Image (cartoon, rainbow, N blue to C red):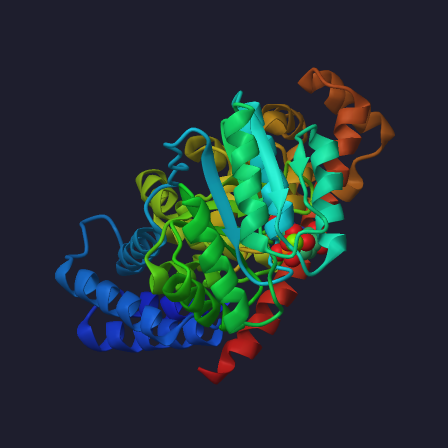
Length: 439
Ligand code: GDP
Ligand code: MG
């Protein structure tokens, strides 16, 4: 999806300004990309309509290119659709009740424990309960998780009325002065009337402060129908998006939020109990666009380097032919611009998290100064061809830069790795260009 949007935006960029025809064409491609990513059709339509109004209404600000303007508009609209900022839990009653609903496997039981730990850390006295009367293993699973985080789990293993268990748990929570009761429910693999009825009955009998719909980020198009069914038949106050650590396309966030209008409050980002965080719409928007903090950075970059300079730098980076001399020039530019990670995010097509991680390892901001000192101590010829640097030169370079031979070796190794990576990226870009060629 990210590549598709980028390629669509890239095409608009070549025209240099946002006229209606170009905009229509670009947005059509963005729309196709979103649909291909299984975002609900209506959500996509609303989204595109919003962008179109904004993009057509907006003048291209002086000093900013049309592409930068459109990126910002698309990004802002994504953030807006996703809900601007993370909404906290709304816990008013004592004890407060949180009911988790969703399909089997969506992550309800895991999320129950994650939430319990989070609230416990906030100093709340938390009680967990499972009303999954169909699978004894599910109750056992919660019991084990509760032990892990030292949160008591209320169970009635022989009770066959799920709502009754929930009521009994609430009674206990009241009597024993708990602040929060978290109710983990049973789910089916598919939307099922009985399951919805049961969830609704539990809800009516315990009056939860929060009904959180747990949605698996990897569900794709189906997520919309599931969310809709739960919202219409049970009702929900918020959404937890799980498995955001997977390669999920982020599209589910957009459609579930769009279709229910309910805030996404938390994100599950792994199987461990601590892999849980407030939902950050701007992060997910950036992820959907695949352009990191492009919006603010492009603006910042605009102040310090002109586009041509950036483009030729990018060409060199990706050609795999850059030398330590180029490396040094880039370092100077980067230092004017801020953290290198953000710069890397800015280069179109480099959205892959894996690449970023590798690059992070290879080039660390804190080491920039030292790297620059080392390169400064090299002769121009050495900078152009680092292969000629022998052991005695390494010693002299280290002395000259106030570093050690180990540092010089490390830099040369990193440089070689970076160069390799750039070559790989170039290949990847070519591949992507081929794949995207059907536009
Ligand atoms: P339930 O059937 O809705 O109660 O789902 P579970 O809580 O049992 O989770 C189903 C599977 O998804 C388990 O293997 C969990 O470890 C896994 N899981 C839940 N949340 C996350 C998450 O945020 N990231 C990842 N990677 N796995 C998760
Ligand atoms: Mg479960």
